[in-house]
Image (cartoon, rainbow over all chains, first blue to last red):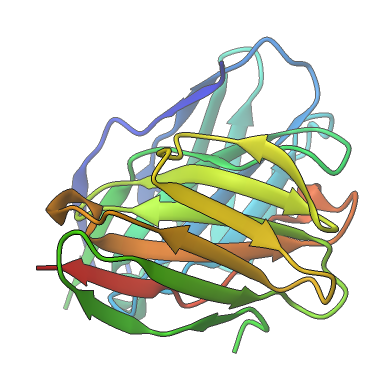
Length: 116
Length: 114
């Protein structure tokens, strides 16, 4: 069974600085998808960024980028120029490739606090 | 507004009772997923429906059941409630074959069992 591990329960960063959140996963599949979701205090789950395992290029969405190391099964999230609104729980998630079946498997999350 | 509608937003009920949570997926999405998030925990997958049929089952208790109706809305039924069932219950939806784009989540139903 696939598992997702986030080894940093909590992190903090100063406003305008850069922070990296770690995520590792375990799978025997070759094709799959990886995601980072953000859950602010409102509790809404918001998709931040996604990565397709068959693409070597790291995904980027504005201030958010990932470092995808397929061989190491690592998928870290880098937040540049951190803003107070980035304060949230961040969840790494995995999904098998293909078909209409398959659920997102989440890590336990990293609580990020951005300090002024 | 994500397009996924969950009702009610909050629910307080007593132990031993039964409740029904409702989810309307985003327009055009055929898959519905239910997740449970307990306090300070990650999201635990409960069950998936695709176009009215059950497709995958996770850590769903026997006291819990779900279904998806012809209009694609889904209901999660929780019975014989216990204190430990208090949690945030999320519904998410996705288009057929588009799981690689992630799921769209509703705002959740906060269930408190007293």
